[in-house]
Image 1 (tube, rainbow, N blue to C red):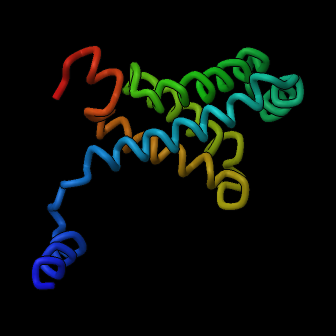
Image 2: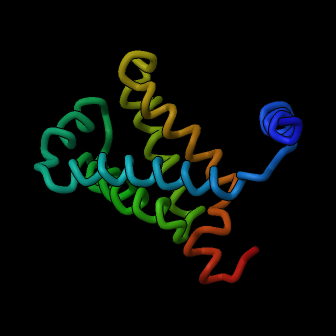
Length: 145
């Protein structure tokens, strides 16, 4: 019983305990990547004219191009993030896309319609700073860690 209590104490009250660092990176990377890919897939398989029209209405130049770029960043960036492949590049594209979505597209209603984009932006930045981790294609390909 003492060993169990000691382990629980260590798990919950040790701020520098990194036992599950790699696993938590993998879980976060998979969830964010797959959710974002799913979101992008919805745009990828639909008519983008409504999305492009909205972008044009809020002042984007070349709204069709930007609608397509946002779709690709979400779909392919999400897949790459989930796999940990070209990871930091994928997080940069996703962060830029989510920054634009949060602060430009939904800036006037950030806390009602833009909060999810804001969360994805912040998580993308955190993922960029952490790196893909040892359970990633980048680590396998480039023999890191």
